Amino acid sequence: MGLPTTQSAAYFKTIDKLLGTAKDTYRAGNPDAANEALIEAYLENFEYLEAPIKEADAELEEKLEKTLRVGLPELVRTEVSHEDFDTAVDAALADLDRAETLFK
Image (cartoon, rainbow, N blue to C red; front, side, top):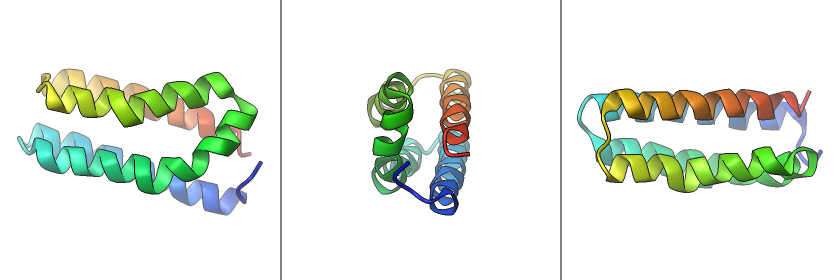
């Protein structure tokens, strides 16, 4: 794998926190803040995990990339219910947990 375990763990932890922030701010009626958290999760964290995840599980990496880069922001843009957004974020978090096990 390309990243040390401690560095990858820090990225996963930050993504988890940012996705939680996105859920909280979306639920509070602030889609712009939710979108900012999603952008930061993808561009400043997941980008560094993409290559090593792809090396181990290309299908999972592709799914996560589409979810974080396109899927979740699209849900915010189209103003889905907060329940639907929470469900989608929770599914992404489960996939991220699977990806994190690749680093152990």
